[in-house]
Amino acid sequence: MHFVDFSAKTYPKKPKAARRTVDTAFSACEYQSLRSISLPPALTAIGNRAFERCNELQSIELPSTLIHLGESAFSNCRSLTAITLPSGITVLEFHLFSSCTKLVSVTIRGDVTRIGESAFSWCTELASIHFNGTTEKWNAIVKGHDWNYMLSEVKIICTNGELTA
Image (cartoon, rainbow, N blue to C red; front, side, top):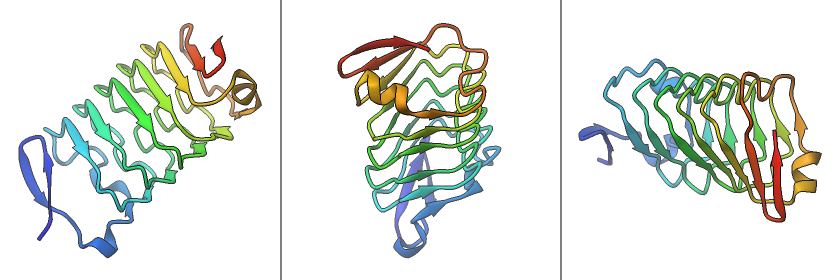
């Protein structure tokens, strides 16, 4: 049997074949004390609303194998402060981090081509997005309506300079 540690509590993990996607497993956080989580290395996708409203979640370690984050996967995670997206992520879906009110920093390692509608809306503390690409690549990203709604000035730190969003 495999185990994963959720804030000093131990829960059984699904068998290897079933661990490729996490859907709404943690939505509204049945495990109310979930403060941090390290996801298994075989994981390739996190489904829609998987961690939505996990209000105590402060940190999450995403595996390098991840290629998809579903809509609203982390919306309303009001204690999440920073996140690093692996290089396989190319689309930031609709409402991905909306209302993550303590989110201060996001690191985007991949070649993101689209940021969905309201992806960072109401992330009122967001100060910086570290983007592993040039300012030209950042400007070429298709950004959905209100992707940054209700944000104050956010620094976009690129490999060749900074922008403001």
